[in-house]
Length: 421
Image 1: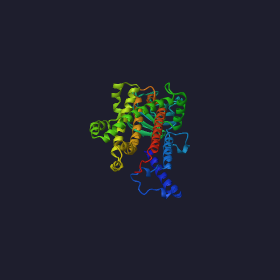
Image 2 (image 1 turned 180 degrees about the vertical axis):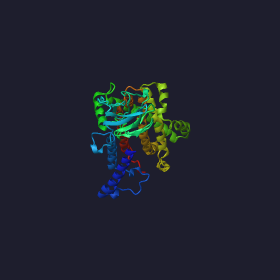
Image 3 (image 1 turned 120 degrees about the vertical axis):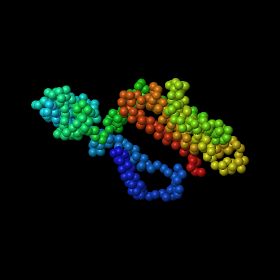
Image 4 (image 1 turned 90 degrees about the vertical axis):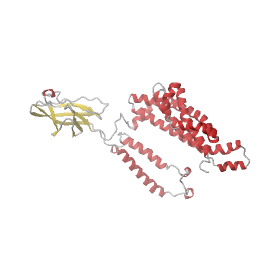
């Protein structure tokens, strides 16, 4: 909840600073502004400042809640308690009570720490010391060195003078103590707001691991090879899906017979997620490269067919009539009217299909693969190497974004008439 509030606050502050202060100070080119922007994609462009601030905000929140060394200390969220905590417990046995002190050393999880020696003191309840790792809890067997133990009828009745019963919790400096059902104090250090590195390592740790794998490799393959295998599978599967899907979509858009024959099949397969086909593809084609290519082919096929069909159906009939009136043949209408006017829809479908293929190949590699980004993530997760998992996720996102940007560039180059009527 706290990160979300910080994110919203930064968004609101950045919006007003950039749009109400910075942009007003810069002279506007009103001749380039359009009167109507609704429904016209060409009239809306991403605000570069907003994009940069958005990315920086994500990394800022990441650093704040992981205690990153890249940020000054005052920007860090409260971290987990580290140091020495102590409390006094009151034991009751045979109608008598006695107090004893417990010293708890809270240490980082990766650092081995020994409990200090303490003077046991007088009375049947003895002083004790123990260690607990950050973000962990520790049962404290306070009666292990007491003269009268739980087996003799002794029980803990208070912590720091505050009465406690099994199942209840008392807060002390550095953490809290909950009495278990069997009467044993369970100490939990204060966790703070920062994430445990096991679940979310700091940005610099992920960057260090990325450099390490880039130079040393992972599971007998370099990082480039892992990503290359995934990209190769996606490109081949997408191209095969486009080679079949686009002609199929054109046929469905131009022929009533083809539309009636294939429409039920396409509409049936369209909502089926590609991941649901993984077991069937494995049964049919095994876990090798062929199975992965077939899965990606099926992921792209229906999207490209629907995009091509939609592109053909969206061609204005007035353009077709105008071409006929000028003496154009059916082949010329197809070449100069149908295909050019359907290309924007096809490129939009291609971007969607490529994104689906990229997500599908990662899932397919999670099931069975010796190389690939998905295999790298799955193997790392088994050994709780969260930094490798996050590295893989970031690389997958960056590559996917790069593919989308490349396809946008190709669309602007090959279909310059998009959005211009």
